[in-house]
Image (cartoon, rainbow, N blue to C red; front, side, top):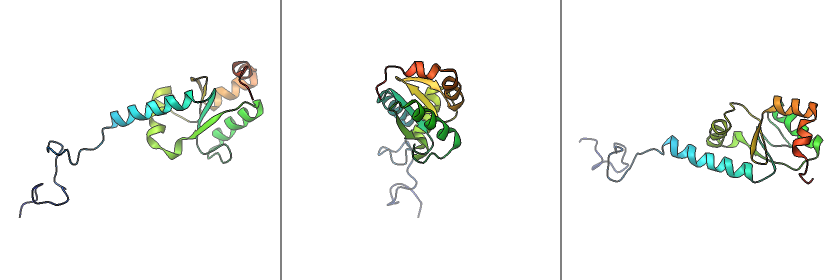
Length: 136
């Protein structure tokens, strides 16, 4: 008995050309585009948005912990997303920002940088100036 879509109840041999579309994986481009739009919506949802590893209460890397500490020291309200919880969001965020690592910091929807840049901006007083006008 030949293994074909006609006699296979699980459609294991189905091909992308099959009329039913069985076995066609979601294309990475569509998934990445959808995820990129989700990232854009997230970073626009708050004046300060951090894409971090873990949560502010439990950061899962030292760089994320430091970035959270900087924001807490500035007493600025911010929102976060744990990039370890969704690989498609993590990949889309890297591509959108053109920045390969996390954390990623956005202020008023604009990508500012990662931990090193945010730490330097904080030390120079530039970050405080950038976030002026954001109500605590």
